[in-house]
Amino acid sequence: MVNYISGLVFWILAATGVFVVMPIATVNPGLATIIGITWFFMTIIVSSSIRLAAQWEQGVVFRLGKYHGLKGPGIFVIIPLIDQVRMIDGRVLAIEIPQQQVITKDNVPVMINGVLFFKVIRPEDAIIKVQDYRYAISQYAQTCLRDVIGTMSLDQLLTEREQIGKDIQVTLEHDTEEWGLEVTGIRLQDINMPEELKKMMSRQASAEREKRATITKAEGDREASANLAAAARTMAESPGAMQLRTLQTIDGLGPTASNTVVLAVPMDVMQAASKLNEFLGSHTTPVISAADKP
Image 1 (tube, rainbow, N blue to C red):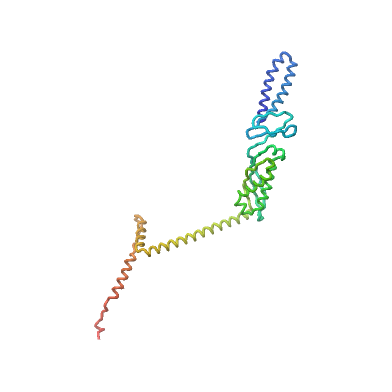
Image 2: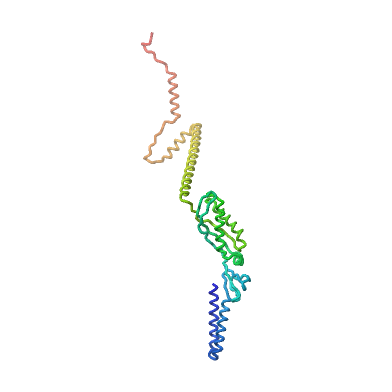
């Protein structure tokens, strides 16, 4: 962007100089040469003094080596050979935290990497107070990552990623604020563990799932037995409950011709027949044969 605007101004002034010098050259070639050389150097000076900063950029201006001020966004002018400009990107920047080995609190080695998000809020401090703010915050984030994870167990590392990111962010913000940087977030990406530990965790997870399945089945059996007992009590207390249940079962079979229905004798009929048999048996007169007479 800077080269574009400076180059554009240079070629506009150079073309203008050509149209100015050519009429003079036909009359006085020596004067035209002097004007041409002067115009050329003035074109270089003017074009190099015009800078353009995008909407997300700001220019830190140093005049004779001392901090002078901030310029931009937009077009601004500096003094050539006296002012120096460092352009700073004010957008949120992302830096990858390279994969590194970290020892957890319970002495488990893990390989972990992440991404750091930050932005420059005070460009002058980011340039003056630290040599390379990108490299500095990247190295500091790696150190904070090892320090925070070193205080946590493996289970906490696997289940509290978001909290770990917040803890690292708080530490970074506290120490990098004077550099003119603001940490907007940090996210953990991959956590790699030894293969043997992965197998052990897989077996543990499988055992936990089997345990939950067994408990769920036992609870279901208990609830089913309780419901069956309640249904049995209801049928025993209501004389017509069994007949109603029988009719519902028959109705649920449907009109399919392949179904075979066996109807049993109702319990009431069987009980009545049994009582009638007992009654008849108790009132029957014994028969005395002729052989039995004295």
